[in-house]
Image 1 (spheres, rainbow, N blue to C red):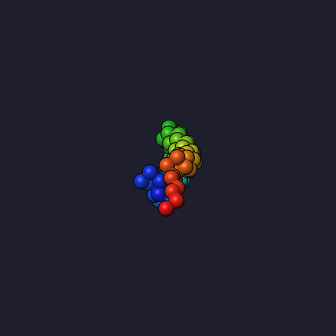
Image 2 (image 1 turned 135 degrees about the horizontal axis):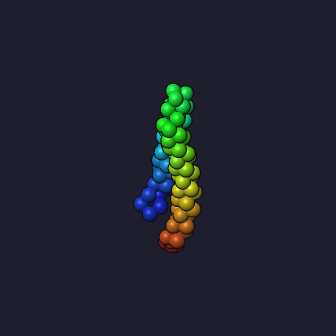
Image 3 (image 1 turned 90 degrees about the vertical axis):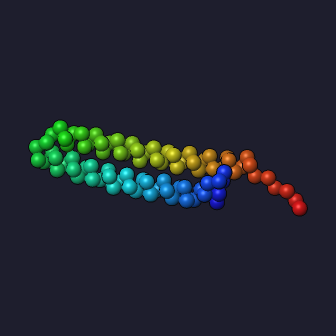
Length: 86
């Protein structure tokens, strides 16, 4: 369905695609952090774990954005819909 010139289903799918990409980067940062830690690079490992935590925050924000978009789409559609008998 389109609302305000935006294909809502496609938009939500794009948020899901972005979330999938961030999930992959989350896993890679975790692997790299442990590789660095196992290799004796403690500071690097710590930074990568911090990056991993930030990526978790990004995924949480994407979930919030998706919920907000769904709520906004419902109210936007309700405000602008006009039904006329012809």
